[in-house]
Image (cartoon, rainbow, N blue to C red; front, side, top):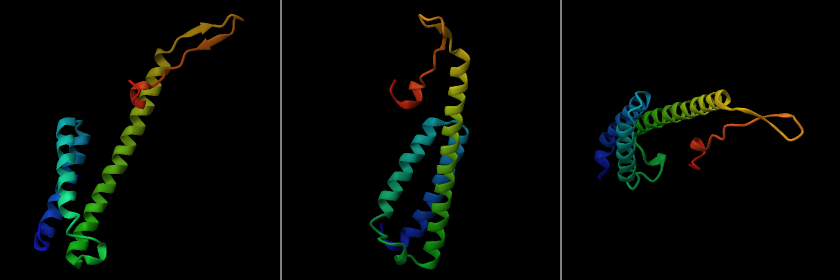
Length: 121
């Protein structure tokens, strides 16, 4: 990619990031994964052209900052969504846990392990 194509690539990247967030909100996992792959490809293409933010023109810098902002919004959204999923799984686990008794007669509540979210399953 040449330097004159950078602005177009940055605008495309910003659009892909916005589409990625929409797909995530709609729980369109296949679309989201495809957009993430496309985003990674664009970043690989852009990286050799720009070695530092100082190398950017004012117009390029403005678009790059909006790309950064949109990507940061996605990160906060994904983090919040993951937190919500973990809380939901914990709540469900509390509802399905059962009580049993130790040999001394004390009650013990079995805990839901959450192994699905830990990646151990």
